[in-house]
Image (cartoon, rainbow, N blue to C red):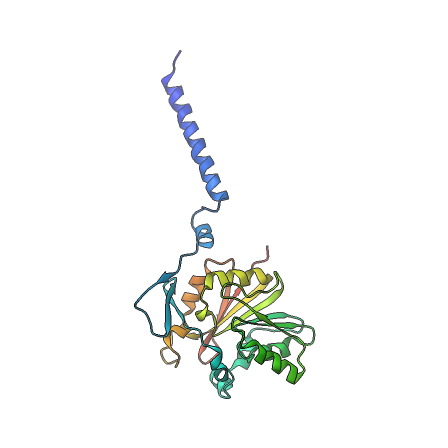
Length: 257
């Protein structure tokens, strides 16, 4: 005998099973919801014709990417007053560097930070001095030769990849560099691949929250913005050190899984 109630119930059950199967497939395909979506679907870049004259007109998560300081400005990186203005010694103290560590100086420039890092991780540690401007790396190699420094390796990276060995680095340091990355999402993703599990990423950026910091606006960043941009990366926020006169030290860690 035909039973309409039983037929309707079995149809509902079939529909439920189909919806459940589709949901499982979506999750397995990385189409999930909430945090999964944030990690797997970073926002696209935006280009605007009206923008800061010191910027590129390219925006990422609402922030305009700054123009890159060219190799012609290398002397500014080595200015004598930098120690007083930025206190890099205090910054390095905050990073808890130890002998034997492998550190990457991303956007190494003239090597101002590179050789300070090399001293702290010596004798068994190593520093990768990475930059995308080939004109800068010979400056670093000459200083290595002049001072007999053996634990620095120069690396020519690209705008999307620092070209470092996978899972090889304990600390990635970016000093006043990240805000100039042309492809910040892709570059950080490649940096994370080069980090060992538990390795750290440190952003040293001029405080946009402080109008008294005498730096152009697009060359400053807020902690909130850095954290927002890192929310799409497989990194955990560790904390922000605010002991420097003009800059944040914003630290993230690659999870151990």
